[in-house]
Length: 430
Image 1 (cartoon, rainbow, N blue to C red):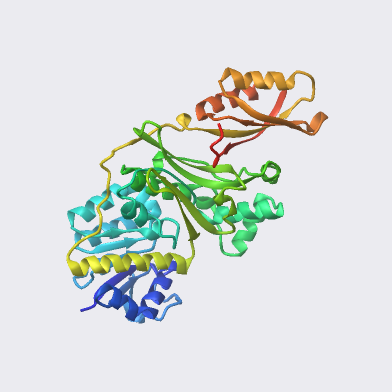
Image 2: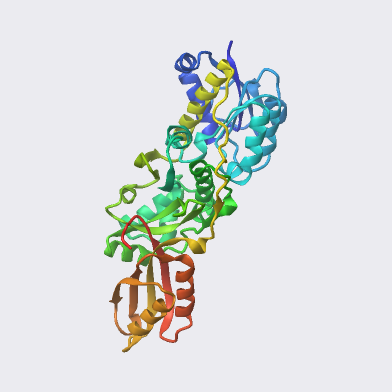
């Protein structure tokens, strides 16, 4: 007997899920132990031309009726957003259906409700496609590393921003020019806010941290900064120092293991770091665990076919569980760690200052850093006269101390402008 699948959404990802289900039907049936059959496809509007060979009679605008039908076994949700996705997923689970989702925003905002519904209804909830597209990442964290102690996750989880920053680095393009190119190639939406302001990466970081640290984490726990303020000059300065700028998602336990920090922001990393070589719209994530050491996951982080590949992997897992009368791992929140404030985060910083070119400037600037107990590792001057800039790189310091230093610098008469402040990651130097 076939396992019947209801699909919510038939856009870029949904149409590819249907295509792969048809093209790989025999293999999928062999791997699961039963064939998969599309029971229906919920769409917002009927009559729109879609890149799929699904029988038009299977399309419906009544999504709730579809997900609660008695003959449906599994619901695949690829519409995104909070509502109506949340209500439809809950309706499906309350009707005994298992769910495969690619919805990072919903899971990051209200994953607790969705997981609770899955447990209450003995239903599966799989969402590999919600983070890093085709890259197998969540299942290794949740299952393969379940016997280890993960203490850090560091990665590039947004292809749009990586493409923009890569183009700025390789060609010297401005942010606006690189964004325009990304939009022309389909890597960026007409409204790129979710990507360039870090919202997309922050949702993914919340999901990663929750699994890695066995704690409940929401998007509200994530410190978020985007890349819209990154200039060609910032990129050139980083390059001159042997660094590259990337938008990073960083999830790390505190040294005492009692809390964690989750942050998304642009940072400089050495060009010798493996993440520095992640080009164009690709994603890569480093996982650091006590026994396993450093692991790196790399691949296509977005796109219809890559994301659909992750959805199909989850469909196989859920289908097998369905036939065996079992379900996959539940949400693990036993550690119940809390998120610490961004001010407690310790890292290094690159600071560029527009200063007056006269004697004693460096000493006064250094004194301001010393007052906040922020140690300077290197300093150099670029330009002279009205074009003079000081570029400083600090040793490791708390974010709160650095912020206080910057506030003090802005009040100094010799500092015309704090041109840029950027964190430096991927180094053990202190």
